[in-house]
Length: 489
Image 1 (cartoon, one colour):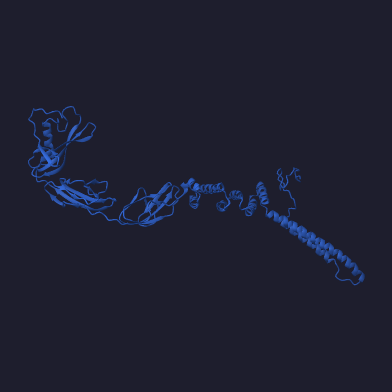
Image 2 (cartoon, one colour; image 1 turned 30 degrees about the vertical axis):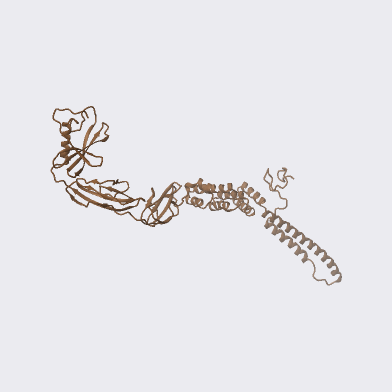
């Protein structure tokens, strides 16, 4: 068979010429308006023929002639009617075939695209999708036509239909997701991308585009009642910021930013948190309630009362079982990073404020105990006087060369003498305790292990050490006669 327009050979079953694009009509391509016109015309012919048949004749001869004529005309009329019915049936059959043929609809759509009539092509593709919903590729073609026409909602709806069609392969599904995400990204509509990703079960797509997601933060502990301190962590696998509140109010971007575990101690906590990704999209708010019911350790018992003291005193604390006591001297509340109480503490000279607190094994802190002391020795012999006199003795004994502590001999650093605390030794008296420290040329300081004790009343100098039982041992420090040499220190 040849094309009636260009004469090219046509393959069997083709509906249009591949060379010139001419549509090949196997049967007449009737349009509904032409079909109606033909029906009206043929119906008019039959009516005109029947109208010419006489109803009545006065003469018998005329009746017989009219009867023969009537039979002939009736036969012609019947033949015409049958012809009309046949033509109408053929027209209707062709129309129904074309309307219900996805191949025909697609060919017409492609012809419209070739001629630039995209609107008409959309109509043909929409019909083709109705006829073959399982053919997912048709939806992609239709979506592209919508996109060409700028019909954005129709474009995304058509791609969304791929996701829910039930006929799409895994590759087709992922392709639909990628096209929708690319479209929303171009519009900077990150909220729609988040909604799309939140509602999908496709983990590959969620992983590939996770930076666009705003997933609520995860809590490291289930809500409920606990009898220990809860170090609650709020986490997210996506780059962004977590905001939270502790009183049940809805968090926003002015709320507390989560940076480290939230330690929940005794009490009730209503924690609400949300996540905000790098594109400013907020997740849903997650709220959990925690009741922490643990017994706090008791406040430390300090043996010394607040007040004025004239005799050096050791501050003693009773440490509760299974607890650790921490203390500060600057008036702040102690924490587990403060100094640990391990033995009686010498009371400092002058005014001082001590705060003590217990922590149990679960890390729960009890109430704080505060003591204020004022130790004033009943002597005119001050600490500065005791230090100055000790330096003179060290120079006289040849250990140092001057008041700066310059060592005698080859050492390049210096000796320092620092007051530590006042000490009362039973049956021996009250003393200033002084440590000897060596500082090298780099400024690094270390205790030499030699300590001195100066009687605050007799002004006698001693070296101070401890015996095997922990008792204090005093040895008199004598000033060597002038001119007598000592071994090099």
